[in-house]
Length: 499
Image 1 (cartoon, rainbow, N blue to C red):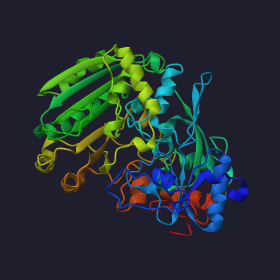
Image 2 (image 1 turned 180 degrees about the horizontal axis):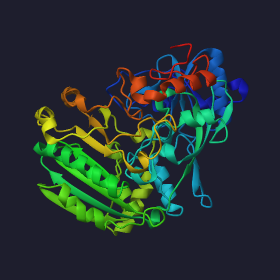
Image 3 (image 1 turned 90 degrees about the vertical axis):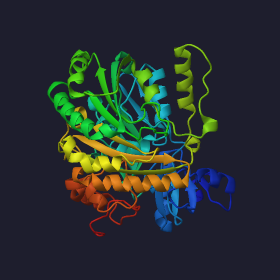
C-alpha cells in the first residue's frame, strides 16, 4: 500500500506501533475471545479503500470492515489472519437542505449524526437509539428506530450508496445505476458484498413534529396478558393509524440495567408522531382508544414532547462511567444543548467493556394469554439484568414488498429481542442460561427469521433466517460482483462456487 501512496500511519500493526494498534483493537464485548488482526488500515478516502482492496487481494489477506464495531456476533472484529478496515475517519456528514438529504461516511456514529442534523436546520432521520453505533453497518442491515413506523427503516431512506467492490473499483449504486447492487445492498447486512464508502439519505423536518408518548406499566406476572393486548392493539393501529409505534419492554420487577426509557416489570410504550407534511392527524384517536386495549395496568403516563426531547430521552449511550455526561443545574434548553454536545463528542472507544448477549426472532401470528402459560413460568425466573423487547413492524416498515430489496422481513407483526448487558461474568452466565431457556420456550412464536442487524454468532441456518426467499438472488449478485468470494466473513453470503 505504501507503493500506492498510502501514508504509513494509516497502516497499523502491533510490531511497528503497539500503542495505536491496541487503541484500534478495542473489543468491548467480553463474550467473544480476543482476536489480534494482522493489522488495521485507517482509510480517509475512497482511493485509500480501493488501494486496500487491491493490496489485500494481491497478498491473499482477508479484509474485515469495521465502522462502529457493534456487531452482536463480533463480525467486525476480524480474525488473527485478517486486516481490519477501520472507517473511523470516513465520518463526514454533509447536509443538503435543498433536496432534504445528507451524505455521510460509514464511520459516522448515530449520536453525532442526530446532533448535526438537528443543529443544522432541525432535521431528523429514523435511526436506532444507540448513539455509539455507526451508520456503516446500521445502514445496510435494515436500521430500525422509534420513528420507523412513519418514515421507514434506514434502508428505505437510502438515495444512493458509494462502495468499493472486490476488484477495488469505486461503484455508484442507486435505482438507475447498478440496480442489482441497489436491490442487494438494502438489507445485505453482514452478507458482505462490498465496502461502503458513503451513503446519501433522505431526512425529514424534525422540528415540525409533535410527539405523544403513552406509557402503560404492569407487573412481571402480566406478560401473557400484555402480549394479547399488544396484538389486539396492533390490529387497531393497522385499521386506524399504522404509523403509531408500539413497543413493549419486559424485565424483572427489580430490573437493574438502568436504561431510562424503560422501568421495571412490563411496560407498553405507544409513540404517536404528528408530522404536518405526511401524518397531520392528532393523537386524539390514540388517546381515546388505548385505555380500551391496555387494561388492569398499575400505572399510566401520557406526555407530549418535541422530536429532539424524545431523541434525548430515549438515547442509549453504553459508555464507561468516567465518560458520562455531567449536567449542571440549568434550563432544560441548556441541558439539551449539553446533551447534543455530548453526542458530538462520542467515539468508538467510549463504549464500555461489558458482556453482551442477544437473541431475536420475528413474529407474524397472533397469540392469546393462554398460549404463553409456559413462557410465563420461565419469564417469572428472569434474572435482574436482561430485557425483552417487542417492537412493532407495521406502518412504513411493512409498506414495501418482501422482495423489493434484500430485506425480507416485511410481513411481520413484531420483532422479539432478548438482550443482556452487564460487567460481571457470573451475571452473564445466569442471564445467558435464562435467555436461552426463554427463547426455547417461546420458539412456537418464531416465524423462522432473524433480523440481520442483530446477528447471532452460532445461529443455525443463519443465511435463511437473515434473507429467506431472497437468499438465492443475493448469492447470484454476490457471485457477479465477487466471483472468487474475496469479501468473506463468518456469516457472509457465499458465491455459487462456494455453495
